[in-house]
Image 1 (spheres, rainbow, N blue to C red):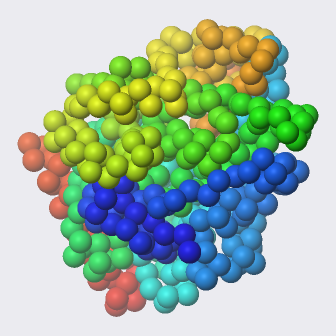
Image 2 (tube, rainbow, N blue to C red):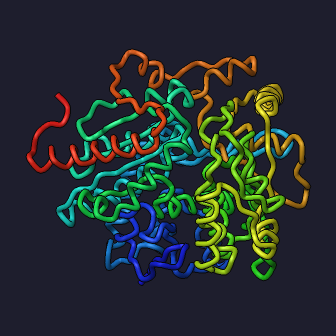
Image 3 (tube, one colour):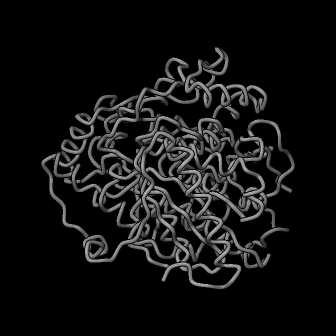
Length: 489
């Protein structure tokens, strides 16, 4: 049966249910499979004609033992989760001029790629909570899209209360409304006077309080949660099956490679791509970042260090200086060296800077390449793509597509770009590029809806203050649920 361990070496032998209900591992690390299944060329070819939803079932079944979730239950949950997407294929390919292929991952309810993994993960969570007759309090810090996706997936669930914290003034109006207009009793939203990295600090401390975690069923739906990463493996494999030329290759020839260009913030997508590579799929990964370029510096020079401040850019969902999923990447590429990863991450968390060991940096730079894009570059990509194709990019996808215009693909290598959100969520950036769009009714109607959230303000002891307020909220939720009373009136 598939077992899981911590990237810092302090936990082994956890099962999928343990991991699903966890945030960070008890030793501060992140959960990963103790071993990865290898996908043979024959397996990949047998999957080539699968619908995306069917592929998700195949991939998830490698990591969720049937003893915990029978195959027919898994299939029903995934099909239900992805049935609400606005296009029947769930993931769509836009093939544009000069070899520019966009993998559209944003056709879910909140128009962001987070919906793919979030809808599935929340259904897995609800399945086990009902089975075990228990409740959970989910705490999510978000740079924009994760919070709205979690809320839309979890609203109204009887077994789940969701606490979401977002950085006030650093998300778009649409992203904010996707969070604050949800008035269901099990949704609790905070706006924080800081950055998404600021938000991560008190949340980490809450999860380090093992008594609090145990007493209130505390868990995370950020990409800290392994289930989120597990589902994200599917869109890399799906892109490979459709874009690599696999079907045209002879059975005895080496598998053809595919380059995947990924707009990168918290590095969950890049971590998923690295896992897929280790499962035997020949991907070449390019991590493209905005002016918050810690991932680019780490890949290119081994400088895993935060800048002094998180810069506010036109691509706010990747305005991140603490790309916590790089811990999973380091663990994979170091040969699963928990002691090494523990040292790196504890040094980084205490000093906010670390220089990678030479051997790890060499392996990382061979596994991933990286680049950075300014706001001017984002606008340039949006304008050029519209002029060439009448195709509108969101600013995050534009971060990836900048690579197309400045490093054209070769005829020998297929390449695609992950589109992580709809441009309709980023009207200000679209206007800055001198372009226009018509808002869908699902977004324009948000302005007419009532809103609700609580504030977290900056003070001299703001981090402790935020932690205390969130702790108080968690305890109040549990108190109200134990007495079967309505939290909001």
